[in-house]
Image 1 (tube, rainbow, N blue to C red):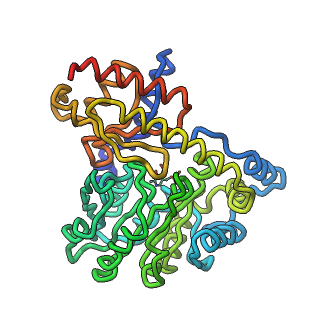
Image 2: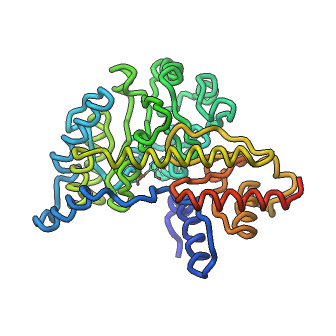
Image 3: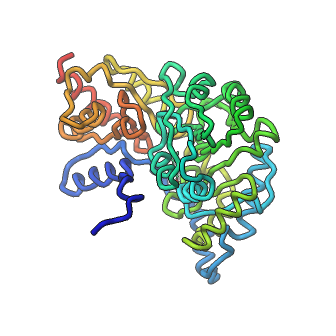
Length: 398
Ligand SMILES: Cc1ncc(COP(=O)(O)O)c(C=O)c1O
């Protein structure tokens, strides 16, 4: 069967594929330490689950307005204002079936064929395929480890063309855990304004930050920049609600209403019960979030220290999210990849085969020197996994 060319060029999600492979080995009885997962290892807080149950009991099980129920949009509006001083009208917000869906919609309604979108690497795995599915041209902009993998104005400028329409920023970052400071965004802002770019700000990890580091995005810098910024967020990571599928996008009304229109002809509204649970997540007590972030902070310290203890390995210290992205290139001259394989894939295969540790090859994120480890797993698994990695690398005899 000849499938559409638009899907033939798209690889399946590498992170979901790795997870499936690790689970398959686990089912065969192997003791796998899985650092591949991109979701919190916590239950959705009780009050949120109860709100979902209540919604079912109350029969809140029908179609809702396509772009989300007014109550949820109001909760989102309030949180933007209270948390970050960002003022949006409900018509500038669309609720979708997860952040991924919200972003997909944006790419579909915003880009024409040939429009270029700047994607700093290391990047989240879905930005490039989403650009391709919209027939836009993904322009990958490499960043440097010594800059904490954060984009500089010079790197941005180097990749600009008359066709550049947008820049994707993701802070805190998946896969690096890097967090942009106000000064770093202020340095990029003149480029955005001067070249008439739009910013797609993926803030899905905004609440998962360590050491009291403040959160800032482009929209918060000035009204002028807010008018050129789309802010993506959702409930998956902050509230351990990955399976509920609630994400949202805020930004210029014309594009938001176009996304609602697209949604009306594709998925219709996000799940009604999940929307009610989402209202409770945003309006209810936030203590559970603080407890999860505190646990992630402990693990961040622990895994960072263990990674730094491995000879030859360097890493940036994650300031947010729940990933660490160490550089293993010290070992690449010994561990030769098979034909057509990346170095990071060869190392990931070696670790899985040799010591049953699953991590995602950095090549999937556009940085082959590194592997991504999620620390959304228990303290015990982190200690076991890192000890195994150290032993496996020692065997290489460097
Ligand atoms: C950077 C980034 N953006 C967006 C998403 C989308 O998450 P969801 O679709 O669960 O809201 C993810 C999830 O892995 C992510 O890591």
